[in-house]
Image (cartoon, rainbow, N blue to C red; front, top):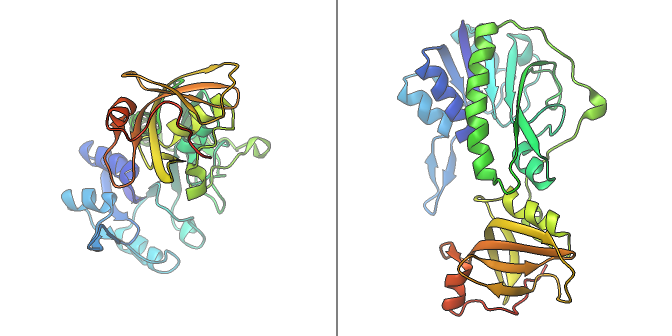
Length: 305
């Protein structure tokens, strides 16, 4: 079976690499155009392009799939399209050329959209997974071919869950290709929820929220891009929340009531959280204990929402 692979970021690159290592016949790769990165604004290849070039697979980076995409299909003559975090919605007439299947990092119909892993964590879900579905002209709403779920740990971070879902996604993709074609099951539109793209405002921690919400906010953006708050007029990031509990306190939300080698205990609206790391602007991540010893922070300081 000849495969046309569409993807852009690291998550997609790991799936492409796995396919190629398993000797699947990938006849072409479509990725988003290269973007300038770093201080020098030098054009850098997408992670998917890097993998494709390593394995000497033809790479295409069209600005639009409407005409250029059809030419690519005519040239490579694939039997099926596999899509993993390509970055744009596929539309007709491109969609009409061959069947396209998407590997999506949620249990559809929940968390359709750009940021399913972060939104599941932010909302305190205790499970998520990978869904493979046939793409139609809509936001992740096509009929489902395969689905596999996994539990989410209480303090599991975005980085940890991301790695776990890559492993599940790769294995499920191989299962899908071995069993293809599969019976498809329509999604229940009444159960659909959405996971919109992350904005800067999403990263802000409000310690006036519940300790549960604050805990989930921090781990949803750990290790990247980092949940943010303010102290001493500086925008800082905090990482590795490892404890949370309800507690009746007479302190203001955001107040640091203790700093030890273990981490900092911070007040929320209805309880406390404990967090290990803090990152000041332009600096490396350090423990709260190191920040205290360096006189950057102390007990009694208050994080501003």
